[in-house]
Image (cartoon, rainbow, N blue to C red; front, side, top):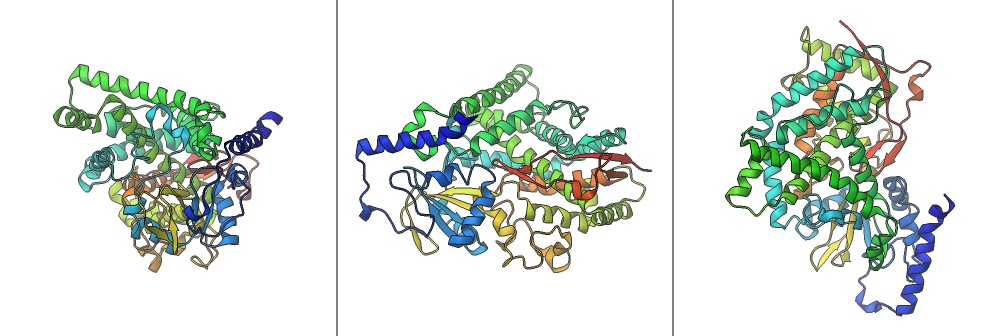
Length: 506
């Protein structure tokens, strides 16, 4: 334990010694003027900030630094590129909209390079890359376009109803809410991709059962990709993989790739056509593209991570807040009951008559954007942000979490859960709106590819969980006991999984 705590500092000392021996001193005249920020040490820069403040809940650490240095500040960990942090709607607009073309790339952590994932992933390829464009078109046909979303509506309705049936069957017994929703979301995505379930959702969320393998794998990947890594601060140490992050990432990615390769092989052997994304990708590969099996596996990995995890986390956060605020829970259940009447299950077509439901989802995403800090990388010379010139390779961090809680932007109790702020005039705030005070999915071409899917599936699942189901806390707990502590990897989740008790009602 002591060794693991001291390792980052031992590595920093080693890096400093190596750098001194190399006598490498960049010419001051070649360095552009930088935004304000914490003063760095000779040679190692702000590496202690990188390994310390950013190790746990970096969105909060960056927000605290913004309180000191302003809506744009910078730091340089080690010998790598500078990091510039943006924490206001105006700065977010400048980076994600006005300078979008010049910020077409994304910082690729060393762990993401495992098994070549970063070089073929839609999440990390530059938006100018032909493969990125091809993947976005393919994903958009099923997860973004109106036609694709309409075609896959029966899949979402079916799995939301299945989730409701399972929860009603467990009436009176504790359920791990996030895992139950994760199982449903993953099966929806897997059916859209290749017409199969990948999670035994009869067990997903059952207390005492191990989390589904997919959840464990995705959790490890997010943990490794977000963890401050000496290889990112001192790239010349990357071949050593001192923290073992790339090795752990490789093992977990290999498990996903093996699954996806097997699905491709079975589809090719059967010759069947299901009209799903796998058929579309194989047809495209045969007709004109140079897609490899590895490209297909990376695309499917992107899809699972981008769509299912967003849905799972948002529903869990919303349920936690509703359990803490019983009056808002009852207000939402009453709206659903009045709108659906005697219907047994919620369908997507019912959602247009549930304004408070959408307000709850929007407020949840304001407080807890699934990805609290989005990244970009300066890909061209001559770019400036906030009046400061940005060198090529500079990593841009946009703190969506800080913007969503900024008292200058949200003056009415910004830390409070108040869905009512999205009713009336507030209903005009949309995920794709022009107001950069509220962009929980990011903006521009690199906006979360799962946005449109999540905008339909999250309210559908939440309504399905509340229709004809009351929720209580485990014995001995009161609403104030619901723990809203955060744990942030690349995504923002509850530090402790939410456990609640569904009670079926007539």
